Amino acid sequence: MMKPWEFYENMNEIVYAADMDTYDMIYMNPKGCQMYGYSSLDEVKGKKCYEILQNEENPCAFCTNQYLKPGEFYEWKHFNEVLGRMYSSKDTMLELDDKRIRMELTLDMT
Image (tube, rainbow, N blue to C red; front, side, top):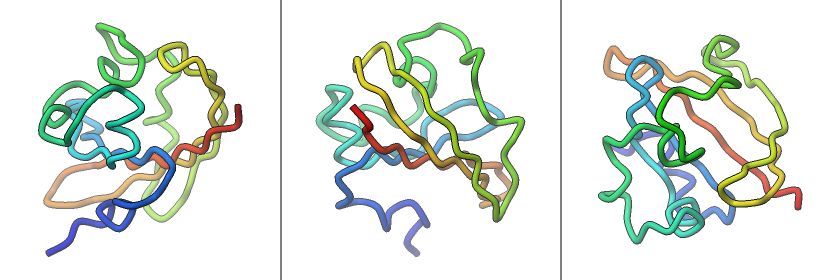
């Protein structure tokens, strides 16, 4: 069965999914992998989202997990220091396999 985020496999924007409780990356589309210097999803899976996305050792101070609810989107803007670009993001929570999953679609505004 296809996971919901796999629909975005060919999208030209960054899409990722991470476990909201462990911060483990579950998915990043090819565009996201390319932007962050990874050649495949296998290199990303299981790493912490804050390590990959922000090059941090701890969860981001601006993490939006507290605002996320199933069926709703939280929209926000952020300058990503790692990529040197301004992004507009849409985040939501998915409940899948007894896990709370953060799914984010990020549009480059630079």
